[in-house]
Image (cartoon, rainbow, N blue to C red; front, side, top):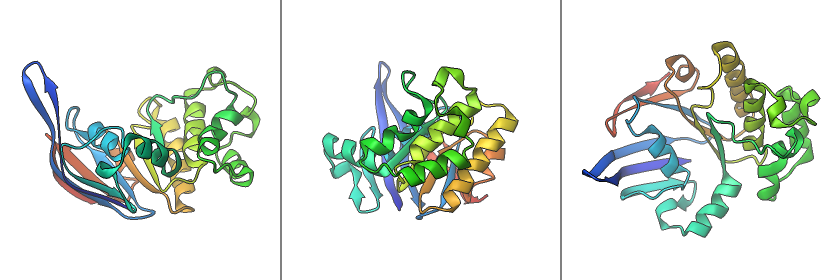
Length: 222
């Protein structure tokens, strides 16, 4: 599903180029889950943004399925991201003017993949049935993150990218949201790449990789 090979990325600063990723190799199989760990500034979010096609590598390659990202135009990347990738962040990024039901359907409708049966299953399994007519501001943090997960999965993406998705939640709510996510993924071919600082969260995924100063410092099964 995901092949990252020899990826380098740096950014210009007043003091000169800042090397963020320095030759990263990574693989993630279809239907598998991987936790990406590391200290702040190690390059975790940068790698996630590159895999999402939100930024370009300086050197190296990223292939997802049959798509070679560095060979795609911005328009191709936008179309691919709309249909093939689900994104979940620490900040829920729900649309405040839309009710829960419309937030859930938003990504799938953009992708032309809205499936009312799958939507109903997501609503039931995420426990959102009584919240569909509410607006995001009327929800707790855990409820908002469940809506964000449902929105990301509604289009049945091949790859789900999550950047600290439980980072703003308390431990109990974090565990509940993570359990729901893993249960939903167990019944789908979607692969999960998650950035997390929590060893407790990472241990629930199938693989763990550690980034240190832009390089892989270790990996293995959780």
